[in-house]
Image 1: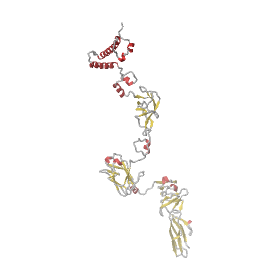
Image 2: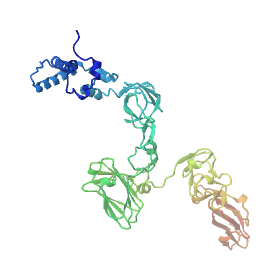
Image 3: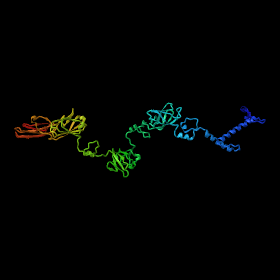
Image 4: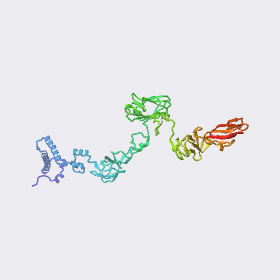
Length: 551
C-alpha cells in the first residue's frame, strides 16, 4: 500500500506552496508531503554530518554543536573528494580537471615551468615549443629561452608552430637591430606585437659609431676609436699662476698664454696614478715655469724641482706614481749623442758644437765614375788612382742649392772633374771640366740651376809643377789662364844693344816691369796670373830665352 502523500505533480500544482496552507479542512496527504520533505532533508544532512565528522547528530536543540560538526563534515568531504593537481601536472599546465594549491603553484613559478624552454632548430632559425602551446602571438608574451647555437646575422624564432618572428635587440639609439646571440646563451624574449625582442642582450659586435667628438656614455666602436685621433682630456689656457689637480688636469694639455712669467704647480705625484700624463706648451711670450708639489722631482733626466718652458717650447710629464715626474717629451732639452753618432737621434747644440767639420761620406775614387746626389752630396771624394781618371758630377738640378762636394787627389794619376750635360763650373772662369793633380783639391757648391761654384781650391804651388812654355809662347800675344789655378810666370831674357824694358800685362793692366839699360844683359820678369785672367809679355828690343810657368 503506498504512502499517504501527494504525488510530485499534485504537490507542484498546489497553491499552498506559494501562499501556505489556509484555514479549513486539512488534507492529510498534502501535509504528509510537506512533512516528509523536511524530514528527508534533515535526515540527509544529519547523516552527512555524522558520516564526514564521525560525530552523532542529536535532536537536543544544541545548534552550536550541529553547526561545528557541519563545518568539520564539509572540510572532511573537501579533503577527501577534491582532485588536487600533482607538481608534474602543475608544471605541465595541461590539466583542466584538477585543483592547484599554493605550494605546487609557487614551486612551478620558481622553476619558470610555464616560461623557460630550450630552443631547438638550427641557427639562425630557432624553434620554441612551450607547454602549454600558445595559440596565437600576442603582446606581451614573454619566454626565457636557452639558445642551442649562435644566432647568425638575422636570427628568427618560431613559437608553437605559429610562424617565424625576427629576434631583435635595441642599440644605444633605441633602434631595433638583429639580436646578437651566443651559443648556450639564456635570455628573456618578449613579443612586442611585431618581433621578439631580446632583453638580456650581448654587446653588439657591430654597434653604432658615435660622432667623432662625442663625449657621452655611448659605447665606443673600433671605428670611433680609430677616428678620434690623438686627443687630450682637456685644453687649459694658463694666463696666470695656477695649481693643477689630478682630477681636473690629468691627461690635459696646458697652454701658457701670458705676456709675463707665470708658475704652474703640478699635482702631487701621489694623487696621479702611474702613466698619467700632462703636456705643457708655451704660446705666450712670458716664460711658463713648471714647479713640483712638495718633495716631488722632475727627471729630465737630471733631477730638478722646476723647469722653465720658454715661448714655443713644450714638455710632457708622466707620473711615476711615487714621487717622480718623467719628462718623456721635451722640445727644449735633448740628450746629446756621442760625437760621431750617425743615427736618426735628434742633435742637440752640444752635439753640433762637438762634431767639428765632417763630410757626409768618404769615397775613394780608383776609377772613372759618375757621382749621384743621393750618394755623394756633402761627401769627400779622394782620388786614389795611379792613372788618370774622370769623375762626372751630378746634375746641379738634382743637388739643392748650397750642397757641396769636395775633391782631393791622393793618387799619382790626374783626377779630372767634369760636369753633367750643359752644367758649368765657375773658377770664376767658366769651364766644363777641371784637373785636380796630385795633392791638390777643390770644393764645388751647387747653385741648383746649372752652375757649380769653386768655393775652395788649393793655393798656388799645390799640385802644380814648373813647366817650360817657351815653345808655345810669343811676346806680345795674349793668353788666358783657363787652368782653374793661379799661375806663376817666370821670364828670362837678354836686353837689346841699347838696353830693354820687359813688362807683364794681366787682364789689361801692367802688373810687373823691369828695365835694363845696358845692352846684352840678363833680364828676369816674374808675375802671378789669377784664375781666368789673360796675360801677355813685352820684351821690347830684347829677346826671351826661357818662359816658365808654375801650373
